[in-house]
Structures are given as structure tokens and as C-alpha cells.
Amino acid sequence: MAVKTYEEIDASILVALPNPSQQAYEINIKIPEFTFLGVQEQPDFATIYLTFYPKDKIIELKALKLYVYQLRNIVVSYERLINIFYDHLMQVYKPDRLRVVMNCNPRGGISSRLTIDSDWKSRGGEERYKDWMPDVDEWQRLE
Image 1 (tube, rainbow, N blue to C red):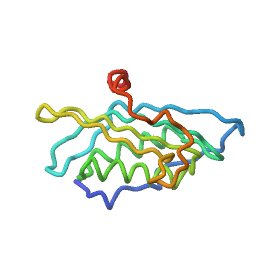
Image 2 (tube, rainbow, N blue to C red):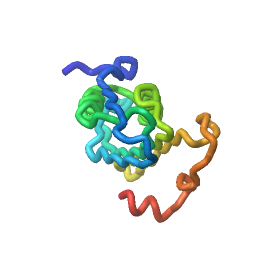
Image 3 (spheres, rainbow, N blue to C red):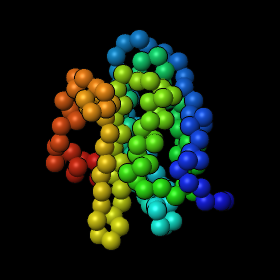
């Protein structure tokens, strides 16, 4: 399989299903085998946690899996990748809220955690939810 760059990530793989409920609820998705090629073309591994508050559409999980599989041969920094991933999910599903947490496995003894939340004012949100506030204990629960 050929190595690709981040410009070739195909968002059309993502499929939206109609939300079966108009009531508020939260969907939590864990992607424990998230892999991609870092900028040195070495494999990087992470666990992704999605918190999703649907409006009219929900995530079709098989499509999400296929979307994630394509990333295995993408050369990209994890900082760029989390932003692309977030943008694609927002464009396709248009949720009330989307939170993406990317826990990267250690490289050279250092691990990283990246987070994007649509509720943040800097992302156009209203900061209605306060559960995104930093919580050191949460790190330990997620690992």
C-alpha cells in the first residue's frame, strides 16, 4: 500500500445515519487501535476518545472504522491529524457537541495527549459544558 499525505484523507468514507431520537443524549466512542505514520514515516499509535452529542445525524461505526483504517498509511503529525479528524467529523455529522481526545503512545519515553472540544469559545462554542476543564485524575482513568 502506498504512503499518502494528509491531503489525501478521504472524508467521504464517513457515513451519517439519521438520529433515531430528538432527545438529548451522549455517545462515547473509543478507538483503541488508532495508527498513522508520523512525519518521519514511523508508525504512531494512539487511543481516540470521542464524546458526541448528536443533532440530526449519528456516526455509522463501520464507516468510522473504514475512515480510521485509511489513516494507517498517512504521513502526518498528530497535531495536524487531530484537527483534520475533528474537522471531518464536524462537517459530516454537525453535532451539538464533539470532543476528541487523542492519547498518543509514548515515543522516546514521552507521551502526549491532544484535545479539541467544539464547546470551546476558541472553536466557536458557547462553553456551556464545564466537563472539559482539566482534571489530572481523568488522565489516569483514560489510560
